[in-house]
Amino acid sequence: MTSPRDIVVVVPTYNERDNLPTLTSGILAHPGFRLLVVDDGSPDGTGAVADELARQHPGRVDVLHRTGPRGLGRSYIDGLKRALASGADLIFQMDADLSHNPEHLPGIAAGASEYDVVIGSRYLTGVSVVNWPLHRIFLSAFANRYIRFVTRISVSDCTSGFRCWRREALARIPLDAMVSNGYAFIVEMLFEASRRGCRIGEVPIIFVERRQGQSKVSGRVLAESLVVPWRLLFRGRRRS
Image 1 (cartoon, rainbow, N blue to C red):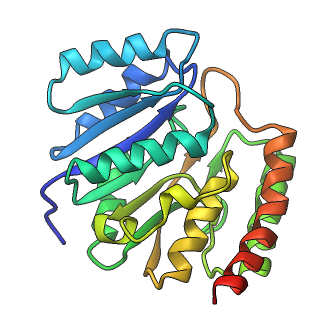
Image 2 (spheres, rainbow, N blue to C red; image 1 turned 135 degrees about the horizontal axis):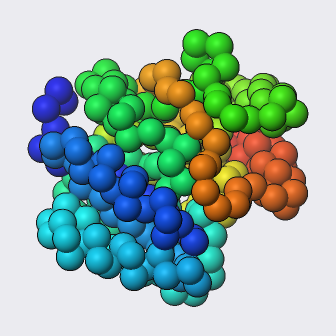
């Protein structure tokens, strides 16, 4: 699939009103790319900003306003299902905080000609991270080693949230059966893709720490990330 008909970038948002216009401009600069904003009831008015962007770019920006329980995993499940239903050839997962540069989108999409899932990797060519303190780099490196050890997934950057799926691969993932919610959802998706024989590739990116707003990574998120690989491993054994 060298020239996909349609590409949808799914971006969950929570209090990202200042970053969203810049991100939107970067995504729409690439022909064939559409944006689906999945707003989780942001109290800062991100949903209204997204609606205005959709009015400015009809047919290229869509907005899904979520109600009910919040969380990254729940937002992605709803957004990915909407993207599949739209008929997109390639479906991206991408953060809203500008840590994922839209300039990398075409390169990652090109990888889908060879792989079912393509990861924008921070660790494929050393450490490609900007503005992270040393302890954050060590923590991320440890998390990836830990996940690879437990799950046996042979990927350099298991925790990257910058990904591209071929629609037929994403359609094989049991989205409604996902049990993780925070950033561990990213790991769970990758585990399920690996279990189902998806070809997983990586493309190097440069990750830049968010410029505005506050990080969503908390102690609870990190704790979940430690427990989930074991839960996935035991679940996989029960199903085999």
